[in-house]
Image (cartoon, rainbow, N blue to C red):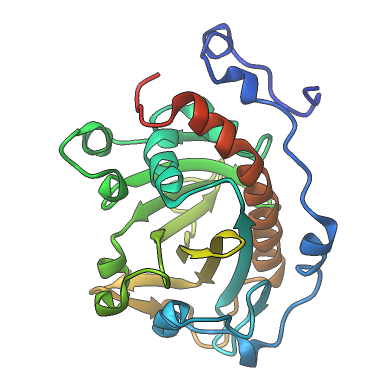
Length: 276
């Protein structure tokens, strides 16, 4: 049943074939969510310069948790296991969902409020000559969402794994199946063009395991990409507010818990197609 917190759909939106998926999100596992209640040990976290550790077999010391690093940056790790999702489905979703605002909203209502693309980004996604796993490379999503600190306008520019900084000589199964990531800037909605914007690096890396497709997330808040390398932009002595780091961590648990339930059905109905 649809919650009263969900904004009503317009007549045009109600006519869309995926409007039926606009409903209360599936609740996360409470044990999983509780792992984001308190910060983890910063000495066990990794910095973006260590991203290639994600290509090592086995687990890192922190797979679910958040903290402020000693340099003030925000660090987030999360892990989900999908039994009914493949890497091909992930690639399709990240090409399909930015093409229309309701597609983003059904992912995690009510915190996902909208998405937009430039004409150039839309043309790239719809270009049949570009492989599905490359369609997001160089594309910027203009999203509006609430990561538990109020609605924000966020620009997320997606990169190839090479441009993100991964060692492509190690880019192979079973250590990695696909990747979605890049860098973004956020500002509170309603701010003027002079508002301070906060940068982050975002990394979603997927690998096959005996139990299904493992999704490992890392965020580094306070970093941007500069010259193909991660760069800390926080002034000395300044930290990303812990409430913002925890808010994004908890949002990530909730949105990808729902994602694991939503995507198999969406893909069965619309997978392989961009326009519909």
